[in-house]
Image (cartoon, rainbow, N blue to C red; front, side):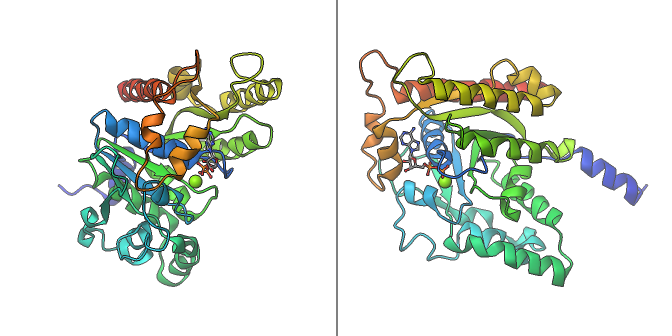
Length: 321
Ligand SMILES: Nc1ncnc2c1ncn2[C@@H]1O[C@H](COP(=O)(O)OP(=O)(O)O)[C@@H](O)[C@H]1O
Ligand SMILES: [Mg+2]
């Protein structure tokens, strides 16, 4: 017997299948360390033996440059994120050879299981093209979401997918956030930087329940170790208190159960070695320097390994719900 169309639609909505370990790294504020954290996480997850696929969806292409691609060459191919999600692909998903878009990272010190879907500078023109496709060709933003979800699923041979988002609400940013199973938000603990986060959380809260990415936690980046307490300066402490209030307001029941007690999943210190790690290209010597620690402090490596185990633990707890 054929399933009636209305029932089928409801059924499809209930069985939305996402890549089980796809994580968006996002915030509407720029310059807070989203790309830094995505890069660090990629290296540390891959270094543990995971197959990790990075997605660079920011038109600035910082992630692609960070893993060693030359700015002049990064998007001089037909295999970038731009080509992968352009509207004429949405209807032809069965014909898209997703594997062709995967690149090795140029950094010769990077773990071999780390791969990337490269960014493209013309991703900033996508919104105009998508709007045109919606108006002229009867496409909808939902189609882009469905396409992105299926696309991420086609990379099931990867243990983790990490999506580095731009600080905007472009169609692609929204679709990828909705298509991922989880999201991490990154902020610097100062008054101006934490401002972008409530907006992001409010928007995520409005996504239909069965499509909503689940929050893995807040990453505090560029934390000032000097001065006073565990968090650094008094200003930092005030920003963190405000941030925690905003975050706890927007958690759903499941998120409260898993991360409610400890929304902050990692604190990355403000260190020269972290900034060098992002800026060094195809020979990231700083990768080895991350293991060094000053006096009594934990090294960035130790901090990242704890961060990675918390991600693993939180994902396995969410999977039980
Ligand atoms: N923990 C840190 N310590 C020192 N510098 C940092 C740290 N995190 C980020 N930076 C620097 O801040 C700048 C912005 O970081 P980036 O990751 O590009 O932010 P976003 O992706 O949010 O725009 C970069 O120059 C980066 O090297
Ligand atoms: Mg960035």
